[in-house]
Image (cartoon, rainbow, N blue to C red):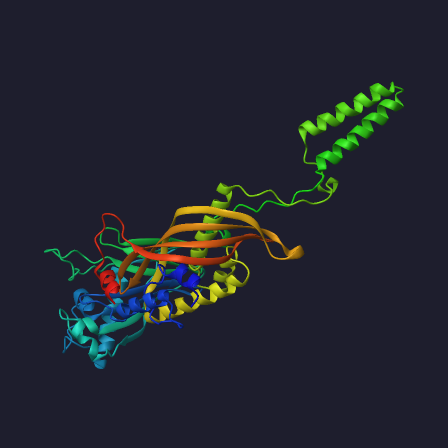
Length: 447
């Protein structure tokens, strides 16, 4: 995987479960973290919650271990460490009743009852059992199902109230606090992360009112080429001729006619009206872009790169990315990131960028790229920026901040400014001031 692609997504996909080849240092880091992801879920109660809406239904895909299940319901199983196939229909009916009563889902203001589908129990690998000293097989075994809420038409709003918050058995506090349930919500082509807590158990989704452009930051347009003779100069000459001829036709003295033409032309030169573009002649290079404007253009392009991969649909994500990246880099970056996202989703981790913060943006030089008639304005940026990433796995959200240094070439392409080249020179995990270190992240650093 290209270093540029890795750098763009390292914070967004810190728990990719497959290592790409060849093994760059960045790929090695992702592979090390992947080993930790494969050992999830951690001991104690866990639930994996994914919510999605399509044209026909709203679906809650739920997978929970038996510790979580037993905290919610008294299923009366013969063996507490497993679910026998004969017990599955009865437990499925109990789950259906529980969520119909305890998890209200309202679609466009109307509460809708669910039907349960795809009920199944996993067959876990015994090798993983030592990772669950507190809960044993109950922590390792999972029951999975879907709650399906039929739709008559695409909804404008969907409200979900999550009901279950068992205690966090891994908390160091004497009184174990309730778990916070991190979930992923996919609707209208966008994937977002949602956090349910006992204090704020409801999430309300509203259909976006606009398309891709509304989610992307506005990028200043490149300076346009300037005419060698601007329209106002041609207009001044025309006004001079008309005024001089009109004065001469009125039998004014030549000096008076000349003065009349010069005054009229002078007024035009002072006012400098834009005039029709057809009055401009010749072409000269566009003005150099102001450093502040160039920095703003680059930072907007960079932020939009990360936002492009919030889209689930491949063609939409590609279109959003093409608003920031051009040339050969566009396809290469898209394919690298898409491949990594597929790997990540196969492993069950939900990884997203939360925020992008510029730290330093310096315009090193301005000039042109390309050859002959294809030459276009460009500038080189040296940048330092931070990316906050959040990975959601089995109801837990782990956050990390990565700081990068890099150099970029930004080109004035026909559609506007685009990043056409990039080189990442430094990548470093940084901790937020005043936050406790994440045990999982400390473990990653040792792998």
